[in-house]
Amino acid sequence: MTDMPPPSYLPRPDGLRLAYKHRTGRGPTIIFLPGYMSDMEGGKAVALDAWVAEQGRAMLRLDYSGCGASEGAFTDGTLTIWRDDVLFLIDQLVDGQFILVGSSMGGWLALLVALARPERLSGLIGIAAAPDFTDWGFTQDQKLQILREGRIEEPSDYGEEPYVTTKAFWQSGEASRLLHGPIAIDCPVRLLHGQRDDVVPWRNALTLAQQLRSADVQTLLIKDGDHRLSRDQDLARLIDAVATLPEPI
Image (cartoon, rainbow, N blue to C red; front, side, top):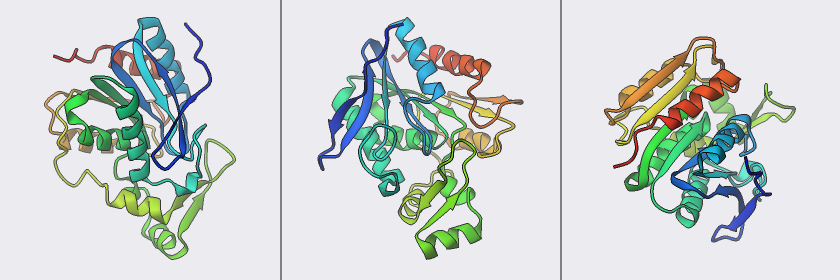
């Protein structure tokens, strides 16, 4: 495996620099979208990149603005801003077809990006995908607190920093909900979800599969899998899902 260099940076039109790592190779390019308060150095992204290097495939890892190595403040980010960050990097860096791999919130972003670039999408993989979590992920009292106070902070199971949800992020999420109707995505889709996921209910994967317009949707429920799906066997399932996607016509 070839070691990846430090991140490269590409300035958005407003000058804020977005960090990314772009591995060249044969396509379609695999694009990994991290979850909320995560970045491109997470275990799933790194494991997938190592496999990509062995296969001679192309891959783009990235950090949304305010996340990881990218410039900006995390609390300035919204779902729409991060979707547009992804689209900007894709349009600037990726030639031809691509496959989106989204973890948790990244799965929601993958769906939004897919809807924006359907002609270039050859596959989509969701790992504990969390579309619409601004709706089902908060109690009514928490939603009222976000609206009243402008933000809410919750303890995180994955680090010392609390999970912060701003009013702007919550409102952008509510404006980007997808599960209420058919989702006009026609490429092959693979959904991996652990049934011990205590963050995103595994039944959400079944709802998402039902709403997707594509006829080629497969849902893999992992009975002993948690939200992160980062064990060796989980990573092997992820790589297999990518490896066995149908070749684009």
